[in-house]
View 1: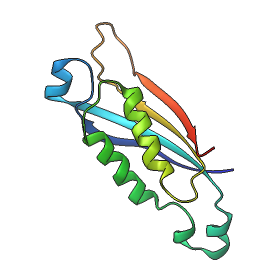
View 2 (view 1 turned 45 degrees about the horizontal axis):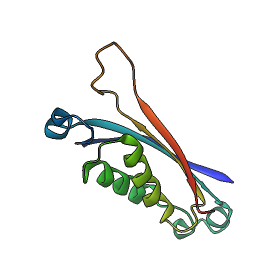
View 3 (view 1 turned 180 degrees about the vertical axis):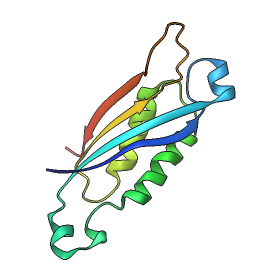
Length: 119
């Protein structure tokens, strides 16, 4: 299976379990890796036979900027479902980064990574 990846999609969301996260919001970063067969698109040099990653990027950002959720696990699941709606995408790996998570000790990043497929 071939891979198409979008890394470091950046959006502001209001996700989290604490009131200040919901009120102030914070930046989230998202990486998606799509599993699909790119041979038909490559053979015909045809965008319609692959995933338009510009459109997908806008859809992922809309999910992050959309309805707040408590858990980034839930956010990752919603993003995965958006990705799987694209024809040809057989599986997706979604990694949601929450670099400004309210943790009281020094840290670099918090991530949740999920893999979902049509099967």
